Length: 113
Length: 115
Image (cartoon, rainbow over all chains, first blue to last red; front, side, top):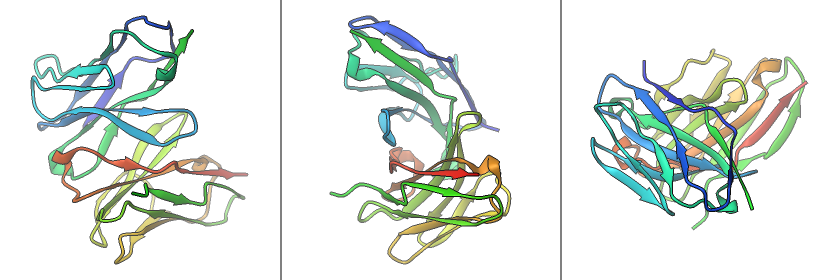
């Protein structure tokens, strides 16, 4: 079945540092890929998405490129802020499975001033 | 525009009891999905409802059930609670249920503790 693997955290960074969170996936079809973010005490929010190979999703300074050849969707941000401290989830949906999202285990990011 | 509303936000039950959680989707959204979030298993899909019909179901025992009403509001029920059912239960809604659109809007969750 479908699966998503992302790097374990926690990842601790200083403000203005570069952030990368690795995500790889296994899927039988042609999935759409997503990054969701969960701030403390809140639900999940969509951060960005890509629906086909070579698409680049971007939002709030974060970027991720859908790489079919390496089955990856790594999240990057050039200069993090304290407010970026959260848990980040990589996820995929297989169009054939409707709205079912398969999530990675989540990566906690802590940005220190 | 109001977001996804889940009630109750927190609840404590004892083993063997049953619980019902409620979710009101964003106005106009017809698809409602439920997820269980635990530290050990992460986020796991429970089921999805679209236009009052269960369209997809995850790998959970029959103790977990759900339904959707004509106004798109949804409830999920867990019977004969076990300690392992302690989790954050997240509800998500989307406009038309097609995964190509991608975005699910999540509520803040209902945190269930089973003692």
